[in-house]
Image (cartoon, rainbow, N blue to C red; front, side, top):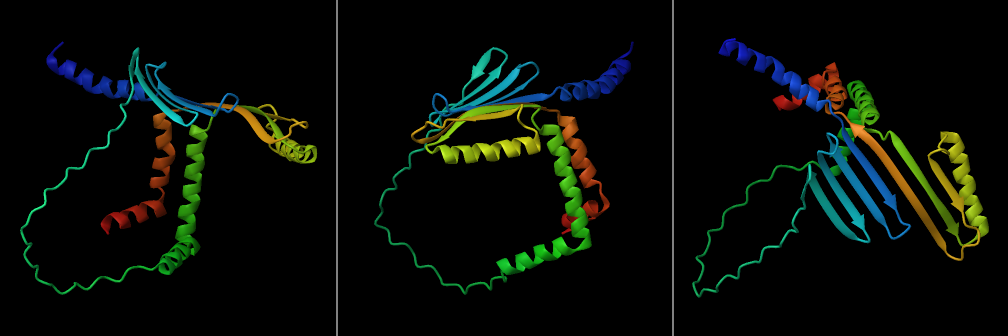
Length: 234
């Protein structure tokens, strides 16, 4: 096997290896609870937690941690630089020559911007671009939306009637959207003060090549492509 064969193998296999690595999903999870003080934890990991970033808020304090395998890297707190005091000098600054002000270009008013946005929204091409943009956002949401969601809690408003009204609204919405399995709330009709205790968790994953599909599809649409070319030319 010659050196050219080795170079050719590297050229062919390197993109395949990079594509296989990019197909490994990035997993994320968010947990929130106020049972023992308000606590929110965000965790993002990749490759069986080989890389993991954790951000936590507990009782108003923020904590961050970045881990590579078994090594933890905690970002240092930023220090505000001290301002140096300038020494006063007795020198008299020279007089500056007064120059005539340059004529300023007329600024676009807020009303003109609104009219331009309204004309874009009412134009046929604008409507088509907005339609494609909405479909792109839907495609992105389908690829990043949580695959697991669970929430539970207890509500007390200090008044049995108000508590029953809120629970009734929750039951109607839960039946309409079929979320009783994932969202469960109960009422405390003997509470003296208004409160809510909750625990929520969601998990999902993101695959980078899958995120590019809606973006590329949106950019290749003829009205969007013509708009991008016009913006680049200007």
